[in-house]
Length: 552
Image 1 (cartoon, rainbow, N blue to C red):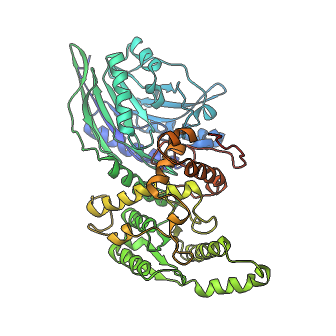
Image 2 (cartoon, helix red, strand yellow):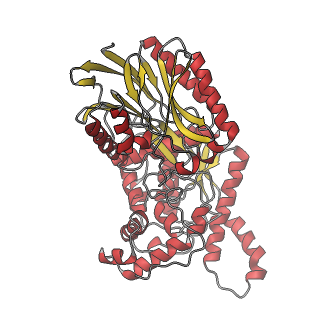
Image 3 (cartoon, one colour):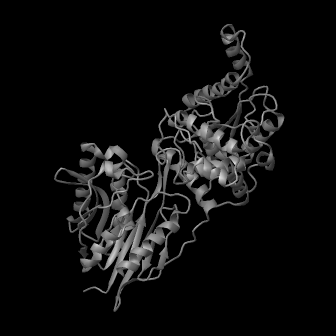
């Protein structure tokens, strides 16, 4: 009987669909664990495929290839510690989210996920069958239970494991970030530890996948819910954890407590991480964006430089006759502060050509939003031409407030491949700019200091598509707008709720109407970093054709 058990927790970043690459990462981790003499090397949920697979996992050749890769790992990793890895599993006619323990050249055990999440970004009831709760597996004389992710958010699986003799709980996860998620996870896991009396190791993956960011921040809890160690957020790390047998059961040895950033830093890190991984995993080495002199494009340019480095970011100013001198100065200042390429491409000549082409058809009509949108769409055309010519992915720059109410032009400033600030309300954009000017971290590839000029942050927001235009001409001031949006979108509040909170009914009804009318735009919009549980993509799925309006 062993009295000491050592685990190498591997908080790593898989690439979805790169089964061979993920298997290679697993081998490197296992070799590290073997050299260190640990008993078990543990990887996160669905690591062999990457996560979330969505419907790809239902394709037989895909899940069969993943299972074959796990079987090959078992053979390759025979002479050394056990290897725990997540991947798809087949049993009868069922397809499961499974967690494998490989030992001695074979698959020693396989746990099947029982509680399948079916809310927010998760569709696991659609993808997988529910496995029956099973007992623990003995590794070098220690009985370890492996509730998979959602299994640990409910009482039943952990209790079954405790009742069938588990001595330690190892929880493999693919748990994506949203603001405040770490506190939620730890509170939930404390409940499992108190209920079972068992120490718990929570292992999460890291990395960006489409809109989602897996933020790591793995941790361990001893009986009673006391935190034993805390791993870094967002970083790929491997950490050796030791457990000792005591008269009261197994105890995790106290380890390092890595500082956890506040919500402002977590959000910013998530946006940088998601863009960096989206580019790396899709094969784009460089990006470009339209730099208007406004705050949204300034923060997106900063995120891009922090993610990819200044040499890989192109900023393009596309002025019209409505572009102010301040905007020209501010755009150039942002690009110079960041150290990235700055191109100046006036649209006046092209716009005049389009005006002349349409003049016979528009004769007798007054200029309106149509002419404003032509400017935005011309900019989109030119930016996409640069993207095609030079292989640089175009970034869009619409904040969540604009995306919510449709104040972005489809096929214009909405054109592009990724939007890092898609889930960031305008009021948080202002605060994020201040935060970035005041803070610098070693994971940022951009320069320290005041990179976004104060005037960019303080001047009244404007699309500059007509003379003296301001956002406030057609929308409530952003603190009011965002307050209403947070209630209607993030809290699913009613019009009556918003009015009771102090907002004018006229404003609330206008914003509600704009949200519903803009659904078709969001349906066609680029993906962007998920920062909340009510982001505009998988979290919120509304019909495009929709005559419902709250009668309140």
